[in-house]
Every structure is written in C-alpha cells, then in structure tokens.
Image 1 (cartoon, rainbow, N blue to C red):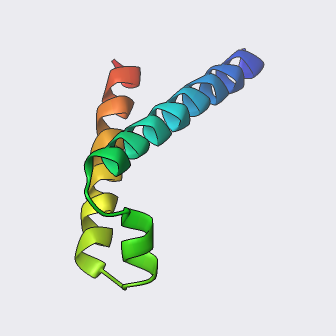
Image 2: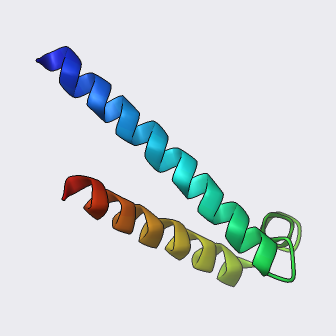
Length: 68
C-alpha cells in the first residue's frame, strides 16, 4: 500500500514536471526576448515575477487536475 502511494506520487511528479517544462518552452518561444537571459543578465525583476506567476499558475492547474 505504501509502495503504491509512493509510486503514484513519483509518476504524478514526473508527469507534472514534464508538462511544466513544455509549458515554459512554449512561453519562451512566443515571447520576443529570451526570458532567462533577460532575468539573469539584465536583472529584470518584473519579468522574473511574471515567469514565477506563470509557473505557480500552471502548477496550480495541474495540481487541481491531478487531485480531481
């Protein structure tokens, strides 16, 4: 029973992580600037907040879909 719960958690984690990475690359492709370069090199705090909000939003949506 415990092993089954751990296995399910790992499956959902990898599914979630894979989907989150795909969503990030989609956002990266549709934005005119490279977000990572803009955040790190140009210290763009506003863009960092937008990307963090995007990640939290997608995480919430996927979490609710998994939870039911």
